[in-house]
Amino acid sequence: MISNLINRLFKGYLKFHEADLKAHYKRPLHLQRQEFIHLLKPNANTLFGKQYDFRSIRDHSTFAARIPVHSYDELWPYIQRIIQGEGDVLTTGKVTWLAKTAGTTSGSSKYIPMTRNTLRRCHFKAAWYTLATLYAHHENMQIFAQRNLLIGGGMYGKYENSNILVGDISGIVIGNIPLLLRPFYYPDIETATLPNYEEKIQKTAEIAARQNNITMLGGVPTWNLSLYRLILEKTGANNLVEIWPGLQAYIHGGVRFSPYRKQFEQLIPKSDFLYHEVYNASEGYFAIQDQLAKDDLLLLLNTGVFYEFIELKHYHQQHYEAAITIKDVEAGVPYVMLITTNAGLYRYVIGDVITFTEVFPFRIKVTGRVQEYINAFGEDLQQSQVEQALLATCRATQAVVRDYTIAPQYIGLQEKGRHQWFIEFSTPPQDLSLFTTLLDREMQIENSNYKQKRENDFAIQQLEVISLPRGFFRQWLQETNRMGGQAKIPRLVNHRKIADSVLELLTKTRTQTQRTASQNQ
Image 1: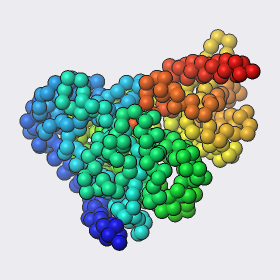
Image 2: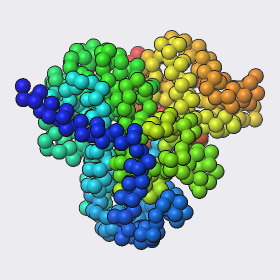
Image 3: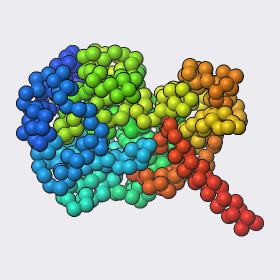
Image 4: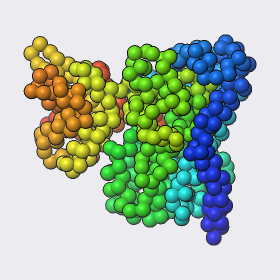
């Protein structure tokens, strides 16, 4: 068949990318040195390059001493000049898009400059690496013989009073899939980049429900689950394999997958199905899963990004001079990642906390967000600890969690403090009280500071679990204007703003339910 011939041709093409990836194992430091040169030299004549005299920078120590660590707010004046039409501000080449990303705790949008060079050398290059590893893991992969279902972000038109297009990063990438590759993907580009997510999911479900040849799935787990459930409703099928028996792989990123894996395994009951994680953000495509047996990710060192790392403890102390390159990182240490990119981000704090699982080659896990932690009682709680405790509790109780957020309930005059967990279950535990007790016990196993504070209820009481109705967090995102391709539920928040807004909506929802029930009596 012609489709099998095309697939074999692409398979051969991907062998070149597979070979290219081997440099990450053999000479990773060389790759980063090359990126360092390639990022500074072409941008020496930009506004930013002249300001910091890129031409005289020869090594990392000079680079780090001269250029400060930047937050988004500190780069915003430069981005404003780009929006106003000024050229060669942060990078050479025309800025064609602004990738819109929402902060998880604040909800405020950020706009990351994107050039065609960024799209080609970072996002598309890394995507080819991703496909190359899939074909290496599965000899009979049929991505370019069948069709693939992607649900991504939206495109929102031009930024106010400018010619620069605004979109979620996945919307920008999908909208620029080469014409040669578009026949292999559903839905059509127009549907795939719709800005309204309710409309996008409905239309995508209608298109996908009529197909029988889907082989690969892709997208953020939270949004994909909503889409797949709708497809099951439309088809009456019990699982996705009944609809698409040729399913082979799911490429996912954006959020930690472990809390959602059980739900996907129920939707796709297939023993040889591949789950392939990527670390792709608006600011860059940073890492891919290159091993089937392990879920850590290979850090990509030749896709237009130069990396620096600051130990988390130093970052919180604002000891930014402690930034190091990959040459000096150690496994097991939590780092805040700084990136310098070909899109014009310089020593930019992306906000993720990563830990190297090994070095040479350099593999990582994303263990949390700089802003997402709880330290209200000296417990210094991290997201990775929370997720391990939650997974162990779910295994013990057969519960399945769809989404959650945690906040401290502070110590009062008459009461002790505690952690308040707001959980939306897909499969609730039979005994919520037992679930809560086990979860508290697992938290003490994962975090010794928490255990110490919990000793005899000395500083904090047993945590509280508030079970939320099905679909609650989706409603909360709508109510708080957070819907979109980059929308995420904040996991750990060291204040009460998110928790109070959740409680407010929960009270409102319950009141409406009670009112409706009384009217129907």
